[in-house]
Length: 319
Image (cartoon, rainbow, N blue to C red):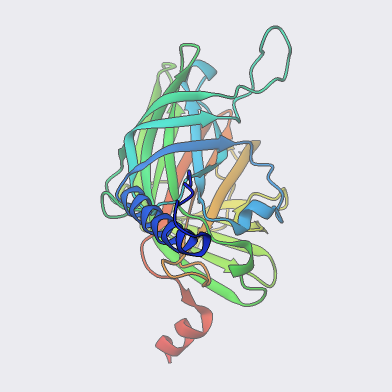
């Protein structure tokens, strides 16, 4: 902000200058708070768990980037943006720094630069025109179209994450199961349900359970254990276990060929989201995941819909 020297004596001029600066900055801040978020950046999910930027005000969340050109391959990516606690602008600038492609014949280089994107709030999660929330975001790079669900809200500060105890989150989850029929045609089944997340801060481990689906499936419950707490995020750790279960039956692999479990890859990206009054422990949680095998693909986006309760609060309510 440009400052001007007063013609009055120095002390008087400084006082006038200070009042002008504070008032002008407050007015600009008030205008920004009424503006929707216009820019979000997608990052490769390799950010350090102790990154210094995790103590700065920012948006945080995850985007499940998919492309028909890549054969329905999906990649969960970390996202960040400007934090003004408002909804996303429908005409969003999506800066994709996680899409690897060749540039001038150099393999492995990363595209960086703004691209116009469209965002539309998805029903069934947060109130419209508010954050945190779930959006469907689409954009193109060199005529290749990308699309997928984006969950985003105010990111928690690293120092707000408890060092012990456990928090329980619950909310809505939307799944899509993509499979190929006997004729080779691809079919997509869309399912809504509920999820719970046990966020273990002392153990640095998490467990997500999804159930109460509105479509009859070969399983009633999907469970992902061994998720890893990385700073302000829970991510797939390589030691996680994904299973599905029908009633009281055995826990099985999500995909199987005859009686043998099929090989699959499972990627998970999520963020702990901040309270409106800072500093405070996270009060919301959301993310995306993909489970993909040769037999089919399952994707999901999820977001908690209530203020998180501590384990002690849950025990007090049950008493």
